[in-house]
Length: 111
Length: 111
Image (cartoon, rainbow over all chains, first blue to last red; front, top):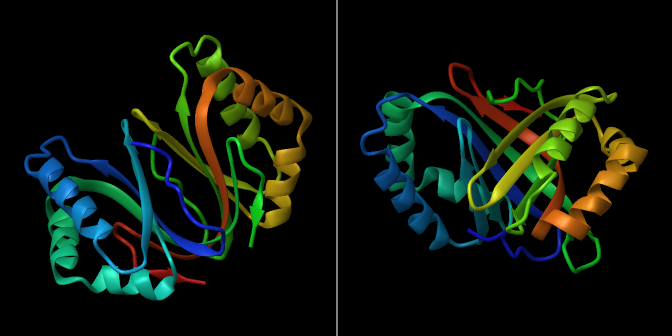
């Protein structure tokens, strides 16, 4: 996975952090499906994900409204319920407004 | 590593995403030292980190001023230069204001 090529700030980020239980049967398939579904949503700008002991997925969105719609997407809401019931030992979800971005080979892009 | 126990929003997040070059000699030691140094800075609230192909480190801060001071810390600035010169094939750094947080076992905490 590559760092996401997001546009100039401001835009929004949803930072989802989690630890999984030992029995993660079915988790990878649902996680892949949710990534695929997120990519097709209006306002989706990109996603970055990595997991060691802790998993971090940051998805980027045009505005708060895009995040709200994604949160309310029926298949996504069902997957979150299944995740809370079956796979997540611990999680955080943070909604943020991205104000500044710097990147390799580029200059800093302020809001 | 555990999900960070951050306070009620608003607070700030620095999302650092990177891919490393093949020869990462010295990288792990410097990365560990920077985590240790960050934890001792004023305004530091927590950090979450994971790396597969892509590495994501999210550090949380009380306010923008805390992030600015950390950015200007001399040892940190030198480590960033070394990182750009030696270890990073590609990177992004995003500065964000966290507006909302939800967590396992808790209710949503709005700004």
